[in-house]
Image 1: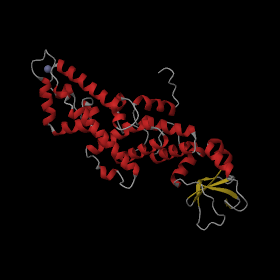
Image 2: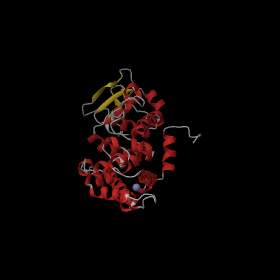
Image 3: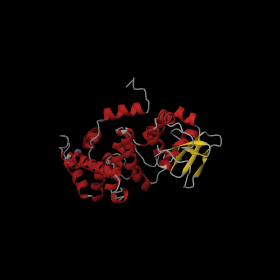
Length: 332
Ligand SMILES: [Zn+2]
């Protein structure tokens, strides 16, 4: 927060919907000004309350017209989203109502920074509904069925931002799936990773590093370790598993699918990913055996995903998530 001079040299631009004529404090961000209620903001944000208490304006200084002013160092777009969430609460409804991605991340970041717990929690509920933290939800995930309106190309730009903000606010539980999905999009070359990330941005580079670590983990779990080479159950005489193995190795699309979507490789037959029963002529025993082996691989991959990325284990991440969302874990 910086003091602002009474003699403004730049023209200031009122934010219309955040200009209350009877407001008693001006929040200045860049060349934008909002006229809002000091006591109300202080009641919502202990940090703002402290800031107000230590910046009693002396005569003439820190004033815009007759009203004391305070400058915030945060990006103007973020501050206006955040002030609206507090002062015009219908603009930032609870899940499952829709909220915009920029609005969501702005409200989360500043609610954390200025300690507005109920809005931080509301924002995290939206993200918790979006980014799964258990294997079954990750395998069922459909990026289009959600309440944060994002096109596919916006999603791959959104995920590195979520990862960066998750670090900033300590919600690391958001990162494993977000980065698994980013890895998946960029590995599949649906999106060139060079267009998704900004090499000038530390958070972008961090996302690339995470995607790389996910790739290594996929390699270790699903590719390098030849889980398809196991013996068929003893009562199979037709060497089904060997045939299935060669089917995957010989089919470019299947082989790629195993790389970029290992968790859904055998699970979403109706959506074009491989259906063991429909596409293979595995005998019943081999099908059950392979389903079990594959399922164990997915569990192994998922359980170790956070550590493979250099994050704390799921137990720790899920405990943080429960606190972040204020879930009652006494039954767990
Ligand atoms: Zn068989």
